[in-house]
Length: 490
Image (tube, rainbow, N blue to C red; front, side, top):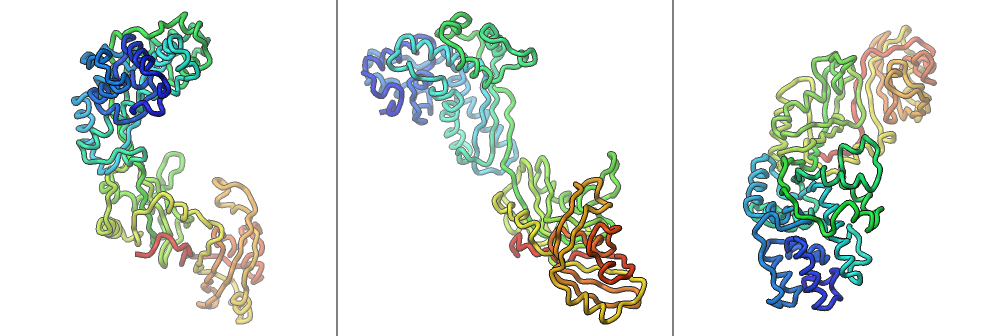
């Protein structure tokens, strides 16, 4: 039975026929007749003929109660023609053409449908009409119990678009096709509700569906009927399509980058609206990809960051590209190699590796253990007096040194003032000459290496100056490794 689990499942045949006749005579189309019966079987809404068959079934195939197929837009007082005019073959073809011409390579899609707020009023009006005539069936039914116009529209149009385009229509589809339904008399009908409730002036200019629903659910039959007819009157204008828009689920690409320049920031360096550097790691990676993916925006993030004058060597630093509303999402391993080569061939300042598409779930690994992961560095240091072998040995045998770092003076303008406890897991000093040595460090992520070397005016304790009891400064710094096993090696 098409009415299984509907409002009328336990009603007699005579009652079902009477309800069908009442809704239909009030001016509702056959699909809306099914909705107000509480029918939730999508196949019943697949076409006008299917709806007709289902209504006949509800009436137990009594031909004397068979209802004519609707052929005019003005036939429906509850959906404003949305389930008739906007479900016909021309409408389906128009939507399919828009999807095909949008440029997205999606295999799956869904609909986001925005309907006029006044449809809620009309639906409420019809429900009150049924409560008055069939109290035993509808007394406990609320407006949200009736299958919505937008859901019925999706049931009617989705499978046909699916068949026409060869795409899969599902609730978690990759491409969101946003359908905007416009009813030119929407504001005028909604304004009638002003007689039921006083609204702030700022809310009088626009009626949202949620605002209308709140007013209706908090009202009562007598007050509503004083401002609105039950059942609703026949509309004088039809609803119609507004602009169709599209939004694809994000695409995520991960990789690792090396930075070989000491005059390159990680992200665009902008102060007071002025760009201080010509390029950045982010721009050198993202700009070559823009023409390949065609997204509205590319959001760049990385596992930590290095200073402008710090290189990132070894296997590089893990990074993630979040493509907002991408048009191209089907990327093979060969495509990724091509994009990787394109980036690497466009600059000598950065290089990327292990470029690959990852899932949204995978992206969480970029931030997992951000404070616990280990990083290794090489610092070129200057010392006023040459280091003795004993001093070098002291450094080389130091393990798991706990330090406290106040937020460095150089970043206080953009970082919260705090004291951070960090661990220097190991150090190894290699003397170059009387005044220079290289210090290889393995530290907890988030350690400020420059400040550990020179002390930052005592804001990092202990530091290399207090340990050596000598004036020490840092000349160059390289990140040698970021020990995060992500993304996977290719």
